[in-house]
Image (cartoon, rainbow, N blue to C red):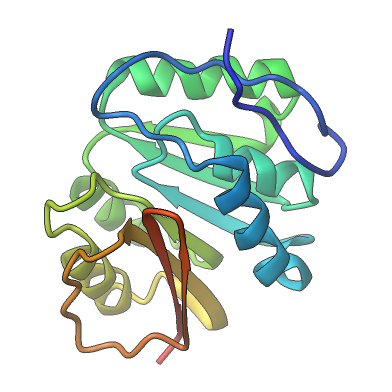
Length: 183
């Protein structure tokens, strides 16, 4: 069915569903493993926000590695359905919430509900200029706990202009991961 899988933790080896779509590009195992090697000590018992979630593979990986709860935000109904299916496959449905809506509509709702997150992963469509406004919105709404971490994935060579300076930046193939801390 797919090469998409959980690479570590209690759901290690479980195959995740995906679909062919030009707008869906799940992180490769290489990128996912590198990301989780960097954030490994922060995942256990964390509250994790997966924005532009796609198949949900990053948030599900976090759950497999011990995250307490993951909130997924995805505006494509077919992708949101994939996330729900993948949560059932891995047995994590009870530890997840899936918001079927635009990220910029979901963030104010999360703020009103009093949500704050230890880890936030941003993976918008490449080359559409969405990293900067997403970061700005997250910081403005104070959705990151003090000492928390935001990771933004973008295309190699994609210009990312933001007032926030990344703590760290790593390239993996055609992806760049930038790591940001709270204010």
